[in-house]
Structures are given as C-alpha cells and as structure tokens.
Image (cartoon, rainbow, N blue to C red; front, side, top):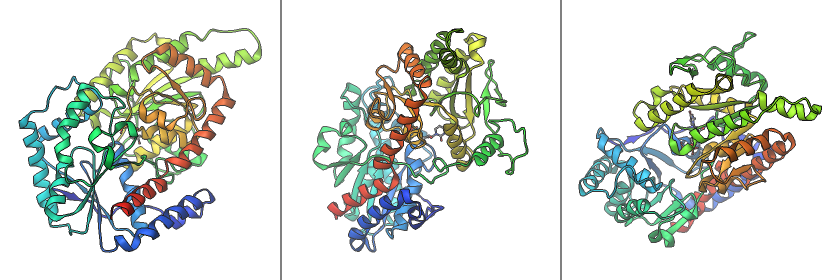
Length: 489
Ligand code: UDP
C-alpha cells in the first residue's frame, strides 16, 4: 500500500547555501518566511503525496523541496501511492493526456474507470490513515492521488491542498472532459496550486494560487562543475573517450548511442568539448517536438555553403558546418513500460537512418542510463554545460524544468510558445522562442541566428540565469508554499 519514503536529506544545509553570496539573500528571505509560520506548524506534519518516487518533473523537485523545508524546522514527509493494478496507470495517463488536450487516447471517462480510480485511492487512503494526525496537512500532487486527499480530509478533518503540475492554456473538448471527471474529487480540498494562471479550471478560480516549479542550484543536475569534474563525467559515462587517465572510476551503466540500424553502440567521439553543440534533453514524447527539431537541423546543414568570402563570413559558415545536434533521452530499458515513448524513439531512429550520410554524421541520438539518479543527473548537467544552444522544442509544456536547468547554466535557449516555456523565457531577452515548433524552416533560422552570434548568446544566457535566480529557485518555491499555508491555517 502507500509507501512512506525515508526522510529526505540534502547534501547541504540552508546555512551552507547562504555561505555563497549569491544565495544569502534568498535564503534569508525564506528563513524569515519560515519564522512567521513556525509556531503554527509546530507538531504538524506536512505530507507531500504523489504517485512516483522517480522520473518526471515532480519526483525531480520533491527531494530538495522536502529536505530544505525540514532544514527550516518544518516537518515534511513524502508518501507515494502504490498499486499493482496497471489499469489505474492507464487511466491516469489518459487523464493526463486529456488535460493536455489529446483526445486520441479516448473520449469520455467511464463509470468503470471512475470505480478503479476511487478504489485504488481508497486502498491507499486506508493504509495511510494510521500515519496521520488530524492536524497534519496534505499536499497532494497531480490527478493520480486526488481522491485520497478528499477521503482523508473528510474522515480526519485534515487540511488538504491539491498541487496540479499539468495543464493546457486553452479549453478543448478533451480538457473539458478531464476537468469534468476530476471536479467531484476536488470537494473537500481547501485550495489548489497551479503552475500558470491559464491552467486553472473555472470551478477553482476562487481557491487557487500560482507557485512556479523550481530547481535546486546545488543539486547534481545543477551544481557548477569544474573543468576536470566535467571531463571526468563525460569520460566515466562514455560520452567522451579519455585521452588521459581520469581520477574517478567509470560508471557502471554507460551512455549509448543509436546506430543507423537501430542498435545501441558506444558513442565514441561526439565532439562535446570541441564542437558547437545543439542539445535537447527530454523524455521520448511526441509533444517534445523531436521530429521537427531534427528536420530544422537538417535544413540548417543544407543551408551551410562553403564560402570563400571574408574571414568573418567563413568563420560563421565553419561554426554551422561544425555544429552537431545531440538528441538525448532515457535509455529504452527505462522506457520499456512506455509504449508511446518506444514508438517516438523508433520514429526518430527511422528518420536518423534515412538522413544523408554527411548530415547523419552531425546528428547523435543519445540514450542515457537511468539506473543511478545521481549519475544521470551529472551526465545531464555536463551535457548541458557543453552545449552552445539548448533547445526545448515542445509543442506543449506544463512548465519545462529542462528549460529552467538550461537557463540556470547561462545557456542561450531556443524554446517555443508552449505555456510553461513562454512563462520562463522572455522572447529575445532570456532566449528565443519559435512561433511554430512544427516549422523546420523557422527552427533552422533561429538556430543559425543563435549559433552565429556569440555575444547575443552570452547576453541571453546571463539574462536567463538572472531570471531563474529571481523566479525559479527552490527558495522561492518554499516561500510560496509557506505564504499559502500561513493564509490557510
Ligand atoms: N531528464 C533526465 N534525463 C533524461 C530526460 C530528462 O534527467 O533522459 C530530466 C530533465 O533534466 C528534467 C526532467 O527530466 O529535469 C524533465 O522535466 P520537464 O519538466 O522538462 O518535463 P517532463 O518530463 O516533466 O514533461
């Protein structure tokens, strides 16, 4: 039944964060917010409840959030609902897709599905109950455990808040279907939290707050890496042949690359340390816009002509000629239970195999091992730091932590008008946005613009990091929760 996870710890205390002059002010702010509410939270546990301990944006954020809140003297625990019934996850995936406007996974949700949804949540609620006291607070993440919060709020009188991480910035038949289905389960919740105002369903407007997702700047995914550490990660993971011995041992699970015939092979020399790299790291999901990004890059390569003009023009052409597209996502072993993901990867592979061999040499599809959370995070960190341009060509994006991570690393990001991305990147200032993520010509133009203008890239990167500092760091997110709880209790 429900899994209560061991108390999360962070490598660093807030006092340690504050020793870095960059973080001293945000840490002082969050400590002041915690002080205001500490007495009222005494003796109460805040429970974060979701449906997975690993994978996806929510599981990415919760460890730091929980550990740092505990560090502030607030008791926060993490519980994960569990079931063997696969039809439950098929249903919640369907709700997820509908909320994103995708009707292809089916129309109206049936009474039978409602029964499965309620039953799995009732079982989890029953086993969770003995851990709870009536003064505890539930923060329930996403639709999967929604009915559980309602049950416990009613039976124990707990304060329950729903934190919804997904949404679409327009109403369609699909979104209406999902929100209609979820509506009854929201009774009993005092409040809801969304990532953007556009996502709030009509019936929640009077009891909703916006809290942006956020990153931990000292996590394995985002911490600064010295040059030696960065090359060590590339060599240990197999992303870079080591021409010199490195201090740290090889990772047990190494990165592989898709070959033309679809098999996984060691990547060899990708030029991550030498060439202008255009990178996208995401799940193998159609909504991440992989296919048009690949076509855009192919166009960019076709537009590159050998030019005997001025030195400056020649250098620009050389930069485009040397650029390499790296598409990186989870190793298929980690996606085995995600048929959609496997299908998307297969389609990318087919297109990759059909590319003109000269262009194919400049494209790599990289498969990242997911067995070790820490190693995966360090690999993503190192790859992002090697990139000249980071792309997130999402057709839709609830928020897009991969964008936040790239911005924090002072990278020029090419994003899209997807709601979560445009809330982060101010077009032309913190990065560039394509107006149509399915238009390869526009993608090619904007990639060329960024690759050819290093000063612009540098300035956008600086502005991007500042934007994340102001809006999307974990301290700000904790303050958001504390201010809301101060209002509710
Ligand atoms: N990610 C990762 N390895 C991968 C692919 C993605 O660690 O192979 C991470 C990525 O760095 C980000 C998260 O998964 O932290 C994805 O979150 P995002 O909000 O961008 O998209 P979601 O997957 O939740 O739609």
